[in-house]
Image (tube, rainbow over all chains, first blue to last red; front, side, top):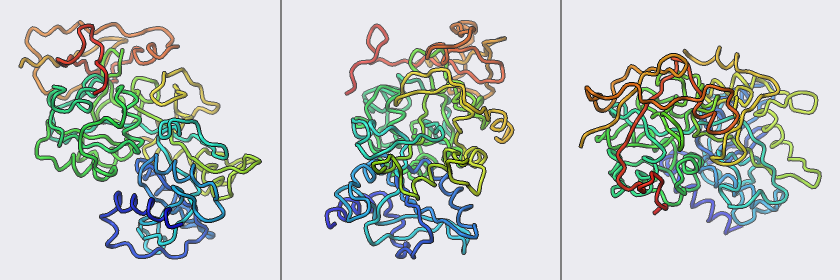
Length: 372
Length: 80
């Protein structure tokens, strides 16, 4: 128990220090579902949390966002999910939830180690651990999350090739990938970040070898890039959902993959929101949201994990859990791409793309919903 | 250093457009028709998909960065 506290608590302090001073101890949550991991998926979590908190029988999404691989670990290592926390499992420290009373996202401090129902990861388990999920752990894939290279609004840069990114982030100043040669102006994350891992796999540079300044989370990257006083040499990495909420401060770069003849935005143009190039394969920097949960001997998740994964995957029929929202619309509004709007798929991190035909095509809904 | 970034406005089925000025103005003598051909069939492989032709509503940016550390054959050196 004590080791669990120290390991996870240290991560909490590292990634959420700005909030600790204001975060009171958490209240007793109503019907909590505990989520831990990716910060890039925060808009979807908050959108769901807001609806769930307003129900006659509310559910509370309790969300910590120390990074994808921390989320994976907290579930993988939770070998005693109904007993004391194993080493590396559970969370303490700062979490957030949607408070229906104040109608706002609220942070608080979990003072006791708390089991995680679902680890949220932007990457496959093996990207974090180097191995397939352990026995008793299930990975359920959800919507697609595009990852972006972003620059300040004042930057004149429009595109980056995979080779440029390799030299900029792999070699820093000596890489001579102008203008991105100032290592203190490379706003990155760390190897536990799904955003960094997805991009790493698409530029051929292991996430552990990136040069730059770890900004601790998506919010830190937004702040660092937006406030840079050297816009042309500044570049950062973000999930597209976070970028879409900060387009007034940032510019996303088009990306040219290895063996690709031209650079493409995630969207069809610099100003659109249609994710057309993600959906048809022209923009390769994307991964699936992975929901990591413990399963019992019958391959069944606990009730909280099952409800959450059913809601996100849209499995709300006879075998699933009814949801108080239309998850396709909520996913689109959260600037992610439901798989039903995808025309390509992949089976591994940064792996080859293949044509994909969803069972039920929601492309028309997607195109009708996103801003034009 | 002479900046080599330039944009090509594709035509017809391989088209794309972008109205923003890049970080360097295209040289007056910059070629405007050197964009490699896109894939026009039904894309089945990864390379087909990433290079499939797009219509003129899609922005395509052609960039030719100078990267001195590339191997002579254009491949990447090992990660540092």
